[in-house]
Amino acid sequence: MQMKNAATLIAAPALGPLTDEDLAVASRALVGKGAEMLGSAWLSDQEAADLYFTGLDNAAAQKILAQALEGRQVDFLCQPAEGRKKAMLIADMDSTIIEIECVDELADLVGLKDKVAAITEAAMRGEMDFEAALKERVALLAGLEEARLHDLYDQRMTFTAGAAELVATMNAAGAMTCLVSGGFTWFTGRVAADLGFAETRANRLVFNDGKLTGEVGAPVLGAEAKLASLVEFRAARGLSREDVLAVGDGANDIPMLQEAGLGVAFHAKPKTRAAAGAAIDHASLTALLYMQGYARAEFVTPGH
Image (cartoon, helix red, strand yellow):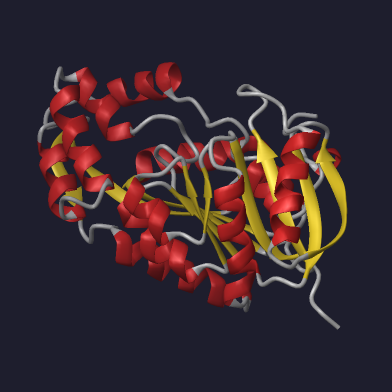
């Protein structure tokens, strides 16, 4: 008996609906390469749907859809239809779970945002050593008062669309939720508390008399430490590689994404997107729930 696979197509409502024509284009492309279609199901009307098929392996189907859907603002993923729900979520923070880069916003408070943002961008593209780039940026923040960090969090912190539903839904399903960042514990602790992440790992800013010293506490958490965190959390739950969903946008996320059963590049830098097993280029973080087969009716919204 051949395996039943699912091609999940996801649109970003702000960019336009997922249409019957999108589904038809995808189905025709798969059939044209030898697939047998086994039906479809809407996960959310005009936003996400599963197309079920057999007769093609998922890697081949993914390439076929990449060509067929080119130019359409539709994200997609082909995988086995059964057993898609993950038991662990491990997520990057800056520009993934939150919309901002915290170190860039801190730099803005001392009038150095452009300089620091350029270093951040180069590091996230994989063009600079992460640890050296982090230390260089934090050194420029020396003397910044901690009170300004509170102001930044209260006034500029914005969660990425879908982040709250993603974490709440996976928590409600019994999954382990982990926030792992090359950023700072000062922020990850607050973001985790606000969104409900169970575990966090990040770098430590050093303060003296209520001001930043410009130093990063050792050891620096970079790409290998993110990977190690994934392995640690997975082992603590006795989970397999296939049980893990990882998401991130930068080059320092690549080892973590590649170690997960499903590693997703979210609105990511080209190097990260090329290395990940899946990508979200258009939709919000709720796409991670649709990719697991959750229907919109199953989403948990905090406070409701």
